Image 1 (tube, helix red, strand yellow):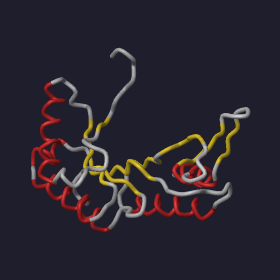
Image 2 (tube, one colour):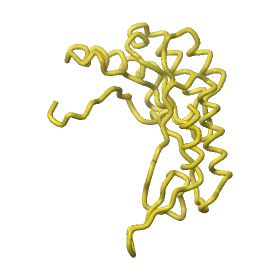
Image 3 (cartoon, helix red, strand yellow):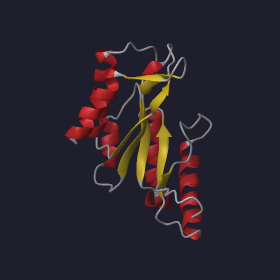
Length: 184
């Protein structure tokens, strides 16, 4: 109300640590939904667990969210990241017929990246298509633009240098993602 910024969705915790178990995730989703509703914020969507991978830990959390009827009812969708363990058939099985969305809330890469690294760009396109083919409804790249880091430019689509005189470069991933966006 104060700023005019519209918030449509929230998560619970980014990449839950090992001590944050499946039952705790389900209980936090249930409590958050109840609290949001009590504040007349029933339109606010909740996504979880936002795991760094779609592995066994993700599957355990997804299964516990489904077992907890109140948590499942209050959840808009399952969420994960897509770096080295993107969406799988196991994730798809958990979503089919559920009426839930799948949010891939953080994709990226790690390491240095030359200007026209088509390998990094192809990896991005492959992961995006993989996730979309496994029922992904919301797909988000991690960092759009960031200051150049010779050790970790793969996290960004656009890198820039502030001195001497501002300049920037669109990395190959930027163009691949642009083409995918146009296709869809």
